[in-house]
Image 1 (cartoon, rainbow, N blue to C red):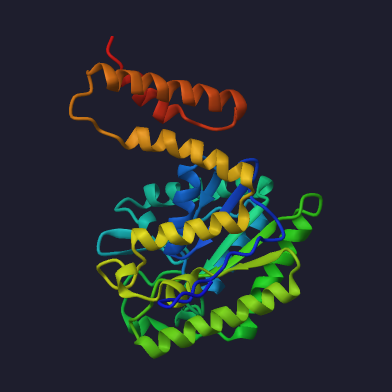
Image 2 (cartoon, rainbow, N blue to C red):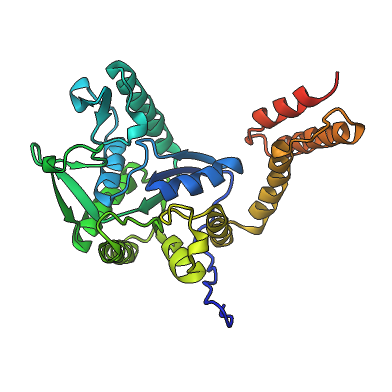
Length: 333
């Protein structure tokens, strides 16, 4: 849709739909967290970033490959210490802790949860953030996160389109064999988050590499669908007011816009209607009145509990325990 002031992308229905019956696994850059949180808020069954935020396609593929292999728990030797914290080269710093055993426990707990989730996952969403990778000189390992270690420890290079395509198709083929009786649908997207450490030109070259790779993956993998998150922010919204204060990450308004586009692309009308009903519960949960003991607010709480009861009766899988407990606790005895 074009207007005198902007060029807008028009949603096109995907060849498959997502509903609350699906199990989703999301892996990738911090933009994955935005979509994952939206899905979780609206009660979809999701697991997001079991290795923490992962930026490059090589490391994302390694995450999936290890999950497909199964029974690949991490060992103490996989960790290293720096500045009082224990880190893993395959994980985001959110897993790093002062105690080595605690770090390993958190990493392996997340791995086991993801391993089980993969067995029933029917939608896999991968968000590529950058084509730039850091290779540990001592071992040749491509790291998911350099944990701010000295630059002399690494060699940096940009993955080629061919490398990304071949690595991704290889692991998707492995997943397809593993799940032959229940094929997994794949959504590929390129994160609109800007990687500016090496400048605007390098960032654009990196994103272009990822976009071309996604195109080729979708051409070779019938189950894969591209979602234009990058294009929505850079070409559709196309304005710094849609970035957060750091001028790198999308603002909350931009995330909402992309989420709406995602909804129109992958959700059916019944699913969107259910999301609207869930949204009313979420809005009530977030509401904080000045005088909670007033009769109108107490009636409002009862209405919210009735809405939850109705939703639970129709959709027993939906989890409203947190919201229901809050509304019940707020009722006057």
